[in-house]
Length: 307
Image (cartoon, rainbow, N blue to C red):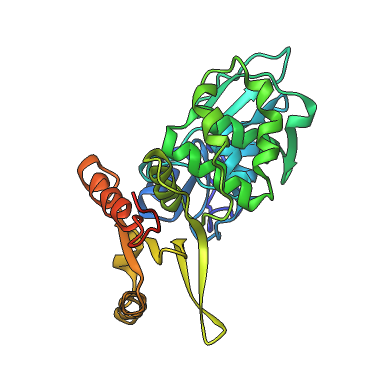
């Protein structure tokens, strides 16, 4: 048996260890002890190796065959957008791929493979791995993810890769008979790259669904000519804003929370209505509450109509 003093800093598989004479039982103990971590199913790295997209790509390359293209959520990750559910990351998500025309999907454990109508223009290379382009990846996610997550993915990919609503819509005809296109089509009409987080996208989608006026994202308030406060969503003429406070609120320092409270206090003192949406406010009763508050706030206090 070979004595392995340090675990590799590059992605490796149990087969690599067998070639070195290292038993898999030792690898299992190392994972349990936190010395090694899984990157994708069947691929490992020393726990001391910093995480990066390049490292993830190297791991994906170990389980993807040359005639396969990385797709969907794995492709989004390689493009810098994380759309996996938090709990799935603890379980190490499968690598999602598709086979090129004329090839069969893989049967490798930990790889979710299928076939798809890819053109050469749909494929790019990220750190040596064949992957669907940001545009193709975003449109696929718009079809396969649940609606809120799909909308957030479309916004995030547009923001990171300089895609516009028009870019998406020009590619839509190819999806005419694609499963999920009924969800995708209306979402493309309201894509907003200026939204900065997944849950902010959820907030905006709820506002659209309630048929309320569309707010301006990332609106700056100037004080004495200096941009001072940035609001998630604003209706400047009515002095109404919607702010999202998620799980990050609990991670903030007392000083940061005091700053938020002071900022919102200043807004209210200066005639703004501030509506705060928190992580649990997307369930029916809580959602209806803040949507009703917003609807009331958007009613003008004065109209020049006589009747």
